Image 1 (cartoon, one colour):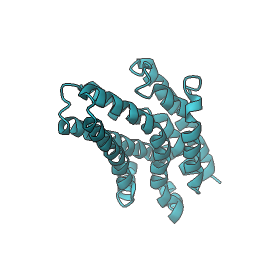
Image 2 (image 1 turned 135 degrees about the vertical axis):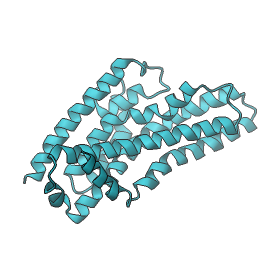
Image 3 (image 1 turned 90 degrees about the horizontal axis):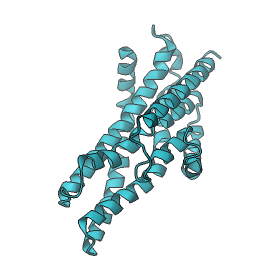
Length: 238
């Protein structure tokens, strides 16, 4: 498995996936910085400033992640599709499932790195605006990283689409549809990749911290990985 991950690293470090990893949190942070500045200029109390800023972040993160995840998976899949490297990779003395799992793991790691950067930027905002008395570490983790963790089933789904379909418009189109239709899956569709993210997104007062939420996400991710892997193996055997 380490050989597969090393190979993926060599390929991914030459792509623009690193730019995307930084661009998502940096763009959101820049927007929040302007927003926080404006609220302080209009005399809002610090506790209100942070509450409104985090509510706004939760509102924007959903659509951003619905489109961001397929962009990540498209970046990590494009090399094989553009160069026809799949036959060479299949000739490697490793199980096929490791090739597929390697793609998922790197997609997951890149997106979680983006979430870590979002958390660090929020911590920078707390220091910059002297909000230390109003903000806890739990709040930083809750609003900065948890939404990115909640995308895990979505990562599995888009890894499936980006590996099986050569045209990455299929995956990005599904992401655009999810951005528009995702709110319709909230609560009633919690068992889908789209509903899981919208239902348990921090800021809506739902019990995301319940261990059953994370167990549900793990099971959903595993099901999507198995289904996607089976389809991928069948596609590669054509």
